[in-house]
Every structure is written in structure tokens, then in C-alpha cells.
Amino acid sequence: MSRCVVVSGAAGFIGAALVQRLLAQGDRVIGIDNLNDYYDPSLKRARLAQIEAASLKASWTFYPIALEDGAGIEELFKAEKPQVVVNLAAQAGVRYSLENPAAYIQANLVGFGHILEGCRHHGVQHLVYASSSSVYGGNRNLPFHEQQPVNHPVSLYAATKKANELMAHTYSHLYGLPATGLRFFTVYGPWGRPDMAPMLFAKAILAGEPIKVFNYGKMQRDFTYIDDIVEGLLRCCDKPATANLGFDPLNPDPATAAVPHRLFNIGNSQPIELMHFIELLEKSLGREAVKDFQPMQPGDVMATAADTSALEAWVNFRPSTPIAEGVECFSQWYRSFYEV
Image (cartoon, rainbow, N blue to C red):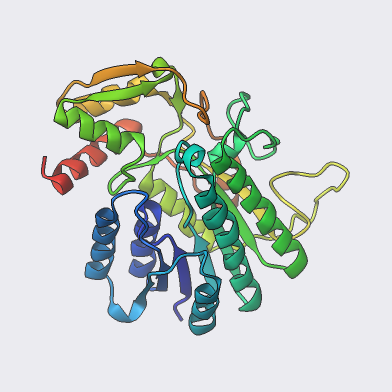
């Protein structure tokens, strides 16, 4: 028997890729997305069209609603009765959170609350939800691992992601909801978000326009290829969180609990300097970038690096796509999709 899996943010970068893998393995998938205009909705519609072209109609249903629509989310859960929920919908972006904090409060806090309530009242067997490497905030102790405290967020986006982790833990504690939070590290690849560096850089490089290189290029990011992220998601969907039977309340482990809630990093574990990423992109696009070096931006962090040993132990998987291979795949897709 196939599962019914709800994927919120189904028209998004990660969501659309996950939906296609779930459909390919025979699951019935319910997609949620409000198709907002944070970035060009035509890219979201193109992702949905790709899903439609590849799916069996009986296995794919799409609801164009926002997580903030509590009544709509309740009706969806009541009608579809999912076994698994993957919450990827969120107001994304660190810098935008400085300009429009209300959007983050509504989508990432109120909206996530509606997802939790749907899971609680309709017998969902497992909630997998997107957290972010941004929760590590001002921490400079690399690589980041799940036992480190995450008490110093440097953006509202990061604060909402930490809040999601706390909310999910509480529902696991109060209602026994198995929940797994995944801290994504700088996801890139084909069909990526236009507000993120790879897409911004590719567009400017091919147009001969300057790219903004923040902190004068002295940044490190743990770039993680989209296919690796989706594989990790799939494996976590198949293994519901369980309580840590050895949990010690006198020495609590931040990544596990005496209830069925777990947190995992998912990253490539091979951080690279921003300038190296730009060099790889220049090589794959066959153009040299015009670089506009700028200071560090509010809400940014100097470096990210993931310790993924806990995820590997849990589902026997760690991301491994080499950065040069991933950048080449992204560049080929970009040229094809935008016909440049």
C-alpha cells in the first residue's frame, strides 16, 4: 500500500524535487504551496508543470493555499488523512527578514503551528520538517554539530527556525508526535531559488553585470547539492523519530529527547570559500565574473560547516556530491532553462 505524504512548499526548490522522488517510488503526494511572489512565481509554476508531466494524476493533488490559512490546512488534513507530513514551506531568506519580519512570523510560526495541529488531530505517523544551519548563528566552533547550543541567532529567519524545533519538540512531548527536524546547509542545484547566490551569480555573469561579493569574499559555506538533500529527506521519512531511551535529564542532549523528536544536520561536510565557488561557476559558464566586493551584511555568518555523523548513523547516508560536479549540473540546467 502506498503512503499518503503531504509536502508543504511543494512548488519550492527542495519541495518540488522531493515530490518527484516520492511519486516515482509510488507514494500518493499532496502538495501545498501559496505560490507567493517572494521570487518569480513563474519558476514555481514551471516546477509544478514538471511534476504534472511526470506524475500519475491519481497520485498527485495540489492545494494552492498558505500555511497561515488555518481552516484550509485543517480541511486538507481531514480530507487527505496523510501518514507522513514534510513541512518545507517557509518564508525563506536571511536578508529579507530584516525588511519584512511580519512575513516570517506568519508563515514560519503561525503557519507551522497549523501544520502541527493538523498532525496532532489527524493521526500523522511522522512529521519531517525543515530547519536550517542558520540556527547556529554566531557560533564559530566548526564544524557545527547538533549537541552545540543554538541560543544566539543573528537573523529573525534563524530565530523562527529555532522556534520550529522547540514547537515540534513540545508536540512530541505533549501528544507523542514523532518529529524529525533537518538543518539544511546552503542547498544549491538545478531549479534553485533565484534569491540565492548561485542563481544571482549565474544571471549576472552571463549578462556581464557585477556580482556582489559580501565580506570581500572571505566567507565559507557548506554547499549541499539538491539530490543529496532529497535523499536524506526520503530516508528520514522512512524512519520516524524515536525517543532516546538513554536520555539524561541531568545532562540533556539537545539533538534528542525522552520523546520522539530528533534533530540532524544535513550538509556536504566540505565547506568552501565563496571565491572558490565563484571560480567554479565562472569555469562552467565560460565567463569571468565582474566582482563588486562589499562588507559583511547584517544577519550573515562568516562560515558554515556540517558534522553529519548523527544523520549517517541514523539513516546510513551522508551527502557526497563534489562541488565541481554539482556546479556543472547547475550551470547546464541554468543555460537550458533560461536559454542563455
